Image (cartoon, rainbow, N blue to C red; front, side, top):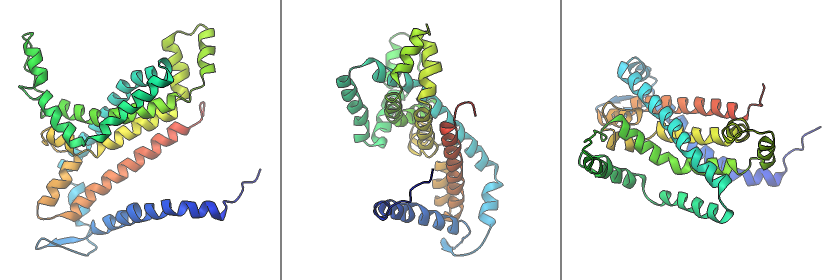
Length: 282
């Protein structure tokens, strides 16, 4: 069976997307690679071919500590968000009427109407030592617990950022699960939990993996939560970039950190998508 060649019309329609990718992804990426070899003299960047920026960043233990911390936080955020989102997405997709689904999807979109920074500032009111949560626990003689400027606070902010999007992606994926397979599992006396694990999750694997991937990407590059809820110390890679640029306008060294982040995200994305679309049993 031979594949049909793309028509001229389809190629023309794809041009805007191609131009967008070239203008706003490829060119900036090439420029970022170029300036990573430049030098800074008297607080001004000079075009050069200097590998000293790469050597200085990649041989520093502080960079690898921040790298490991950022990867750990992003992985934990993706896992927690996916675990919290799945029961909600399952209930929306399998238990509610079409009318209720539409309203809940609308409700999940509403958080995107508000700035993420505003939402993080509101979380400070809840997580501070004299905040709403500790005030509530104090009524029972519990606490106060340190939640702000901690890893816990950072994860709360990251999950808050990712949760609505992950639920939406999981809902859209679960909506395409063949209900006949679910009925067949029930007819074969599969319990609900086994049906979910053996039928629904494998059938929705692509959407579930993509949702977790989005959570990882958003959390890996997050700057707001680690700074305003985690205290910014010890730093993540995004905070390290701002610290480097403030220290003598070292944009080339910051470019090295940014390229390491981009390389990590591309590797993780390629691996996740390969796994998501891999045929079962192969």
